[in-house]
Image (cartoon, rainbow, N blue to C red; front, side, top):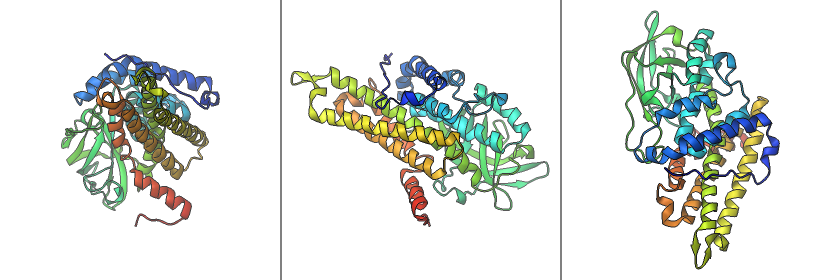
Length: 392
């Protein structure tokens, strides 16, 4: 098994902006990743399998619903704590962070925010403990960046509704116990409802052949005349406000998580540059290698400052969707560029599973696309600063 030699990097002394609680939470997540994720993740990525044995550990470090109130099994923590946990998990692997991010922001968050008290009590404690795992059904085969065009729908049938349609590219789908699904009612309004595994006509075929997020389970959600009790419908939220608010929370976590992937690539490249010798000296002594490393730590530091400020605004309920879009877009792009530069620094060794860089780089190709593509987030910022909608 590979030894995790990772050391974090804090060029602008960002730790001074964190509370002691923040640092304890982050360090616990970091140690768990070093102990339980890093030694096995390359093997699971190579065989394209999610390591289900780590679910209990994710729960124990507070990765499931860290900001959900403790009365429902959550951690009752602030948004910076959530971000730090996501950063450390993605330092291990983006796919593992996806599993935690979906559980927290796309399943527990909507149940807590939009659900009834009965729904909260039924689902949240089991999701927080990892006894149940969840997934989020919004994207469809023909409707990705345009979720308003969804065709998944349900019709009233007395004490229940009949759900039909399909969702795809769904993280956690193959093993999820519950799915938060967005579908149109008979009035054409988008509504949220909880679908449980075992409901007749509900299936979750797995997606195979991925070159990215290989240690994450991805699948489809297929609904063939599924009977869903009306008490499983979120009572008040209608339209895209519901699912988009969930995505805002998840995108915020991604903005932090991408820093973790970038830090792992930078740390690996820095150490390699100090140990690998060519022409009689370490390659870190050459100007072009120093240029790459200096630019990496500069971009990481900028991203750290961006997310910390965004976390403060989130804690004050002042962070806008456009601000979150900017951070998601910037930080994931930053991370993927660093992964590419770091891979070049390692030469041929950079493509092997002996080092994490190629795995991070492939994973980030998904992260830069999901939960709003790189270009869509650019247009969100453009619309915010100009006031003009360029989407239509």
